[in-house]
Image 1 (cartoon, rainbow, N blue to C red):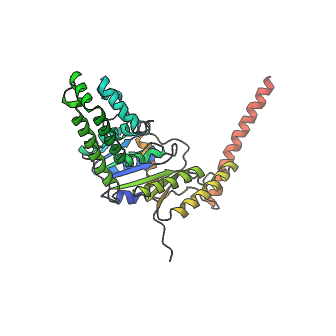
Image 2 (cartoon, helix red, strand yellow):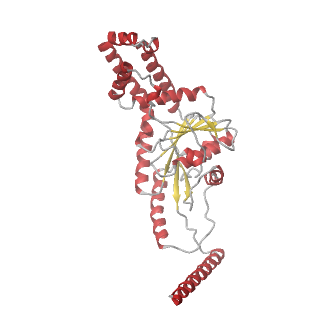
Length: 357
């Protein structure tokens, strides 16, 4: 007997009360931020408090909700339990002590291990997030293969610690002398630096354990029905499997449905192409919840638009027009009549213009 495909909605995420972290990822331009925002809105209806975090330097969350967000969680207008924040994955230099000795030391450390500054700022953010008591946190991740870099951070910091120890052995005495000469106090002694790195490593390891627990964490892949996006999604799913991160939801955005009264050759060709990839998604991910979202004539911006669009996350989209029905014929005739009237008016206008000339 053939297994029935899972329901094409995100209800499974809303029903999983144990979830603590929801990652939303995919290539740039597929509508990740819209999906993260809507997931956060839907979660806010069933969970006590929700935080949506964007780690994308483009900061699209502010655009989606049409409200300015910063690196401090801010209540989203119109909600009592939904908060948003935008984090820059790069450490801001003004947050580090502006001191030659320590500065050059830190920059040597950051150059030696790619991603260590990101790992450190991510650890800081996780520390912050863990002290706040949100029931669930939605991550709108940056549109790159680096989404999963977060998951490699423990090993990145491990390398950082090794490098630190090597530098310490090499410049140990010098370092402690330098901290004394510059009057930097205990805060910048090697032990303090070492403690800081160790502390971050602990936080990240603890969080990583949570990320690998399917009861606590899931990853939602957002894509569009095109070849490159299918390929990217396949790569993402493989990477997630490698990191033992649970993923069983795919959102296919910008799907064109056959619902225009007057047919367009271009759209028909596009629909055929999309259908080919949708079939492939269904075949490749037959055990995933695949949610299909319609391509809209306008962007989804502002809380009202997001709320309205969110209905398609809960029940599969059905085009209002069904081919071959009397209703469809009626609508086509009335649309054609309107277009004919418009064409007539345009013709009159042009003839009048000619008469004047």
